[in-house]
Length: 184
Image 1 (cartoon, rainbow, N blue to C red):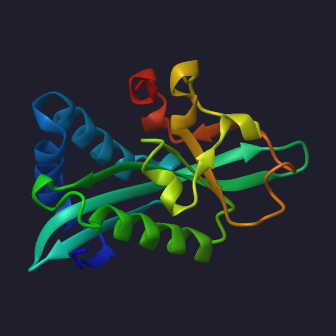
Image 2: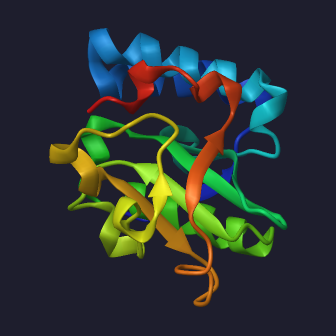
């Protein structure tokens, strides 16, 4: 495992984060995801958000973003976040950088009293960090997830009593309310 320094992202990091995303996601997806990050960072409905970068020798080699979400219940609104996107430079993928970013972000979300964190991601990757399929637990994604990808919509609860007591549609930031971000 390669150890990186994890810190909160700064406005001055945006250029390096965009470059990282272009490299990690390629020429087709990279520009779309880089624009999504920029949009989320400027979107008031995404706040509070958490942008974390992983650095090695001052170079940004990873980035993750957590943005505001919620699950409305009849008597209250449940504080939630959506983890998206996660990017790691190809030269350091599979070396623990993504996991360090995810774990640091989850710890921060728990400290901020977020009750649920959702992700639409690889069903073999995120369960190692405590995520489980969300649909079968009664949490609907902001856009329908095709049945063949149902296990990619996942949740992590920070309170053991919340799963089963809370369910419903997840509301996300305006910048994420585009069906293109919810397709696999």
